[in-house]
Length: 332
Image 1 (cartoon, rainbow, N blue to C red):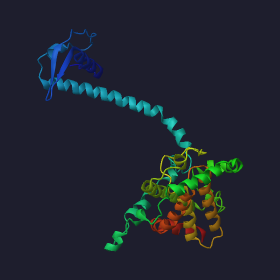
Image 2 (image 1 turned 135 degrees about the horizontal axis):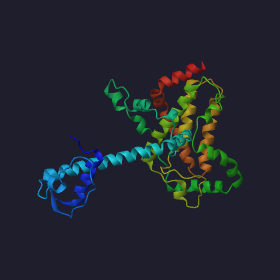
Image 3 (image 1 turned 135 degrees about the vertical axis):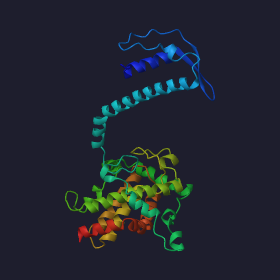
Image 4 (image 1 turned 180 degrees about the vertical axis):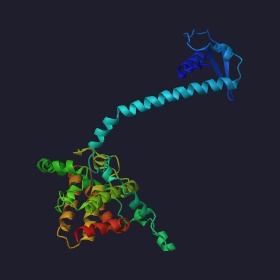
């Protein structure tokens, strides 16, 4: 005996829902009086009982709820199909977007697949082995390092006075501006270039360590920023005009300073005899100072970032120990 197709079943459901209103009560759904019958198009299959015979006005609550469930299922399928179409429509668009993702950014930009957050190493920071109570108590000391708090308003006023004088030096600001723009999103190339390995193969572990340090220290630095909650210089002194968009997070300490000095200290720990260790420290200082010239950080922010890098260095070494050794093996 022929049966109705899915489309005919759907049309019957739609016809039924159009014909009846429902009264929703706390515990049930009841049909109300039917609307005027809607004439349905002729069907090619065997005669089927009219809708009002199949589901009379006094149909029980379960019948009404069943009909609504089927209709909801059809509607959900339609929504799902639409989502698939949208996904296919945007596939090429997303591919192009992923191609344009730049290297590590520290003020909210995206990370590419080769720059994923080093979750395993960060977990080591949170889950250091504890064989005794003393070690267990020191587990999270890296979150409470002895970092000097930001200076008070009087000293901050002196700092903004210095920054206003820097702002007036248009020629020096213009000279630094290209570097300021490039360094707004720190790249490992800033450091590999000084090591003369930027275009060489065989130093993937070194580049990977530098990238992991940038990402891990961004995470740690944001914890300290939130703890100190210092206003940005332009918020304290409205006459300051930053050269770049100001990040939304707090000012103290400078994450650029913290991250760059952490890379310099890590490399000096791995290869203290390497001639480029001093150059990496100079690069870190220059990047941090450029953030001051850009009007984004106080000088005390830069100093706090360097202090945090020194105090955090042992914990960084513990978390990335195997990678430190891999970098050593690349060079020795």
